[in-house]
Length: 102
Image (cartoon, rainbow, N blue to C red):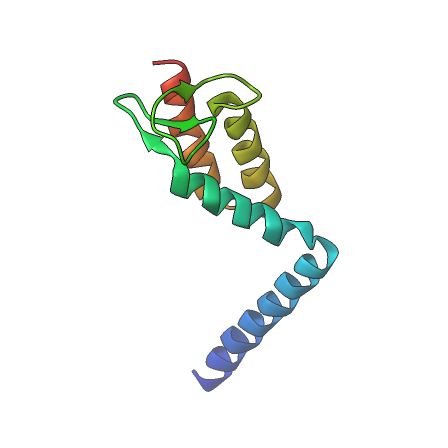
């Protein structure tokens, strides 16, 4: 049992070392995850899913275009999910897609 515990502990340490190595190779990922967190925080819940305003500090119009609206955010979230391996970003993109195509 002790040997098994040491193996589990060692594999966890190796995973942490591997994660650190990935972060060193892809320093942009932390910035992208931060941007994703901000996008999540300014998302607007709708009946169909999620949407974004062109100016998050202003009330009013939801944009659905590629430049300033949900379509561009969806592309970003899909790439963030692919790059990070975190399926939560893909789930967020799907909710935004539900808004674009109700």
